[in-house]
Picture 1 (cartoon, rainbow, N blue to C red):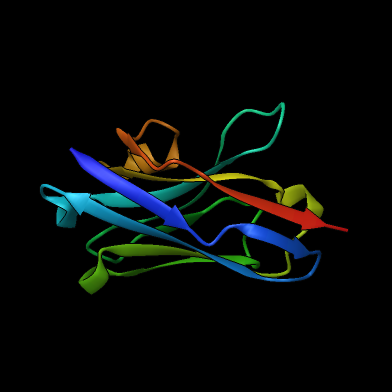
Picture 2 (picture 1 turned 120 degrees about the vertical axis):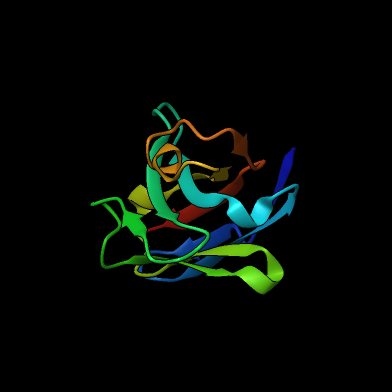
Amino acid sequence: QVQLVESGGGLVQAGGSLRLSCVASGRTIDTYHMGWFRQAPGREREFVAAISWSGGSIYLADSVKGRFTISRDNAKNTVYLHMNNLKPEDTAVYYCAADPDFMAVTNRTPHYWGQGAQVTVSS
């Protein structure tokens, strides 16, 4: 069992920044890869970013390249999503995800999910 706890969502004006955090716990969590997904009202959940737990591999959706970054702090079992130059189109519920297979956190098939964090970008 893996538990994921998210924080950092909120309301921000267009052009602003937010940082989401995801704290992971559970057995063999140091072997898991992490990712972020988002779902806007009436839309399908989509991939945002992924990072391998061991380092060396990151993957960002084309829609956020140049604006978002993903990072990790393994000492704290925490993964971050740094969101800059936010746009109203970024408004969504953001979900943290984990899986022992890196590919799974890039294609919406991870085994473990967080509760979601609301991000609202006003114009």
